[in-house]
Amino acid sequence: MPRLLIVISFLYLSVSTYAQGSNFQKTNPDTSSATAADILFSLETPDTTTNIRTPPIFTGSIELGFLYKTGNTNSGDVKTGLDFRFEKSAWLSLLNIDLLLKKADVVYDDGDTHFETTDHKWTVSSQTNYNLDNKEQNYVYGNIWYEENEFSSFDYQSSISTGWGRHWYRSNEASLWGDIGPGYKRDLYKETDTDEQLTADTFIVQLQALYIRKIGDHIEFKEYLSAKQALDTDENSIYKSETIITTKLISTLQLKFTVTLGYNTKVDEEQKNFDTQTAATLVYSF
Image 1: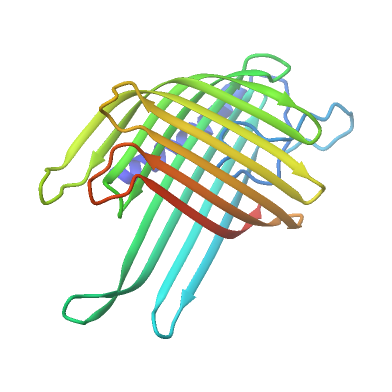
Image 2: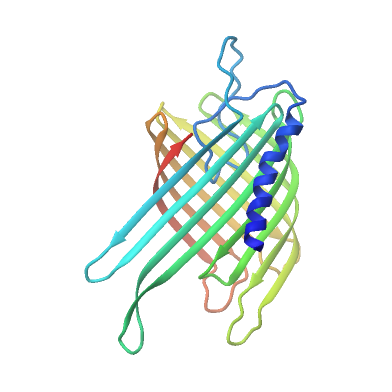
């Protein structure tokens, strides 16, 4: 039930700005898809020409990658995600859901082999931005993030943040955004043989940056960086880098390559601080 309430709250955050945005007259353009790193703004710049088709208020995309192996060893990997985007007047809301599931043969001490889950992670994130000026350079934002990783040191991690951001650089080929603000983070550490389950709450400073560059008509490069810096040096801080290269196959179908790096400063002794994830998925935009 708590997981269902969390997902419902994220959906409400993305949709609720529709009523607020109806009082404004400015219209922003559409993009072909919204990705996990697309939590600040899209690369597209407003088209000032007349007689153009009004872009849809809601857009979205779904991605899927799958690998199944049999023979000497059996394994199966599934990587999927959903992205929803709402944009009207000065308002922009983004909702992203990611799921990673992996099963493989596990050999026990007695020699028996069992096909079991070896990796299971899902993430929900949402951000709403409100432009403060007609040039779309300055904005305020609200951000929510939740993640469960079965094979990490945490039962779950979550954070909430609000602050100010700016569109620092814009050209026909590239754009750069960055925002910063105070927030609050909760880490629920798993119970171990030596330690009981522990809830760690701390205030944070959240920083985000997104760089997008178009390479020709069919390739787009994105680099997303984020930091959830705990104000208490004894608490866990989270750092993340996501590099994405998207190649357009047809108007609604893209091939996406993603390299994700994650670092937690405080984990259990038997766990590693640094995680990497590489994925290739097909993305369908609607």
